[in-house]
Length: 221
Length: 221
DNA sequence: CCGCAGCTTAAATGAACCTGAAAATGTGTC
DNA sequence: GACACATTTTCAGGTTCATTTAAGCTGCGG
Image (tube, rainbow over all chains, first blue to last red; front, side, top):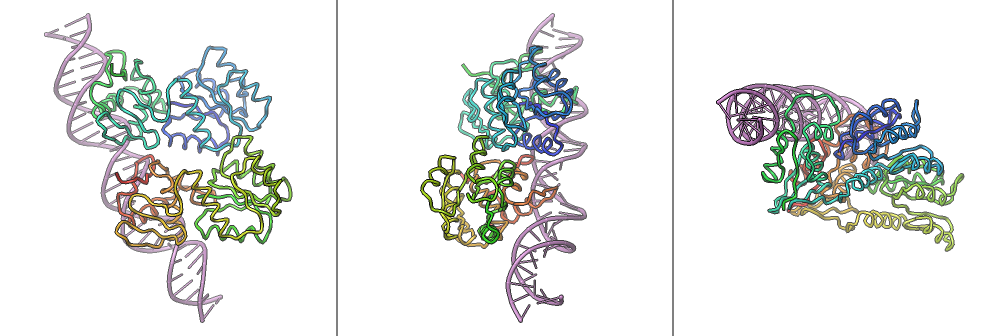
């Protein structure tokens, strides 16, 4: 799950980004409306956390601009004032959820997960498919033979993303974009390597290769 | 367990804070409603002890304000008058428990523990898991070979927190936040050192390290 | 049967973690 | 205050393992 965090507070921003990464998200942090608008246009985030109190453009304007361009990624608005009017404005501008500052990190996580669940129409805690089930708290998988395997951070992020997008063809670049936070890498076969490792754990047939297109996590039929 | 104590009495406040620390809690003490509201918003406490008779804002208003923002941490209300009406108001405002002054310190501890137990859905008085059991009164552990060890304050707080959150990945920053009361954390490996000590006492395999993610107190299976 | 996309293994890298001891800080006692 | 003692924190070196790179191999598609 790749996530854009738009927050100008120099203390809060990095701390939140760090915490979110700890929860298995790939996080890009920007601190201005200009950057936010650009990144949101450029990269297909799964969720955007948008602070309204930005130094340059208002968060609401950024949001409106996205929506007018047809960009429909899930947006969670963050605002300092717990202002009813602003909340209404936010929803009218196309926000998906709203959280007043200050807030607890646990609550933010809860909302972000809720958003992801909603937009993917999938159950979040206790993700199960194709005979395997993913424990998001422990970051482990249990395979159909009842064996439980521990996953490393990257393995977990990859598998979770694929399970949330079953029966979809996911290209290597698409996967890279959604699993990592920095955009730096060009040619690398990391995804291939990690697909291999997942196949070794889950069995060879759960993740199918669509040559020239990408990979598919397929519900066994 | 990190705890916020809101008490304006200049004698009672510090004394209580001290006593609570003696029982192995990380305690932040504030004496005004303004401070209380701010701290409660800022930090993810496990329990808040809230005196109603504050100099500025009423404790009830602070509580209501938290709840309206979706802040749902456990709150124990403390009040001078053992007034039935106030008690009802308290519960209606979202308090989890109530204690009339004057009270015995032991009773307060008992209620706080009950609250923590309730919110963590764990059985409390004899916290036990993975063959070891923690005595919260004596601050000792008994390992599976029957040997009883005394714990220092920090050792106890760490172990208790981990036992109450078994099978959860707890990052070092998360643990720091819940075990210490001042917010001054920088880069330090204190947690690593204390994990080491607990492992020396409990055995190497009870606390697992999930490299890059955190530590897990795991029930042996 | 040629070329390219994906497969597979092994090895390099570097941050994350471990560890023992020393330094700092705190706590009580005379 | 000055002492002993306990606890907490820092430091420095050593180790491990998740991640990435690299390089040769396989096999599909044309």
